[in-house]
Image 1 (cartoon, helix red, strand yellow):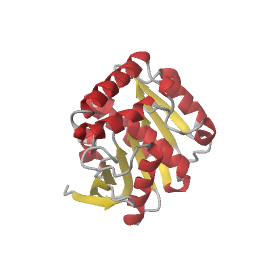
Image 2 (spheres, rainbow, N blue to C red):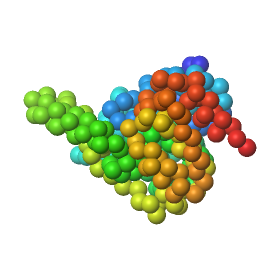
Image 3 (tube, rainbow, N blue to C red):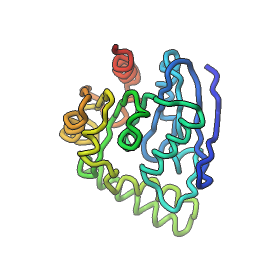
Image 4 (tube, rainbow, N blue to C red):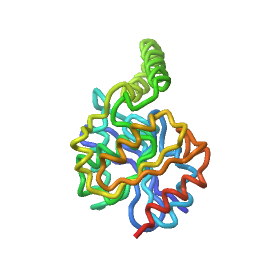
Length: 239
């Protein structure tokens, strides 16, 4: 389907890039750390038959800029709300992967009345929710990028995005318990997110269901899009 390619200007001058396609109720797709909306290239063609897709490049990622001195999920959630206002959308579904799932949880805690349903693939509210090897990889990438940024200013964008991996996202258990919408926690059995953390999210969020898929890791949506798409469409089409 034909895609509209747009930029939304935020209050601080940052430009948030997104693509709009399809027909139906609005569905926002939120990618992971260091990625872009292109991550969902194997989901969009199928989803846009039933939904109006908003494929977002998060602030400081992909084709989106960040004019703020720092980067955090609360700021990124405000970006999503601004896009909804510009598009005259009152309520939408959100599918988030990894940091995109974390962003979706932040948005749902800040703007609960703006969320119809949540799909959280490999999200974590705390750094302790990630396996040790994943934590070590994040710190290694951050240190390497920080050193490079001293010589190559363009790397500062990468440093800001990687810094998100080093801190808890800022959503408390109390706030998770107040998320009112139906939520799907979807994870692969071999994800870098600890299984007990994914199960914790499913237990704490009141209307959450939990799907664990064997043989899949962190890039579930890319490695097995048929199964991934089946699970999310099954959830989204439930009465």
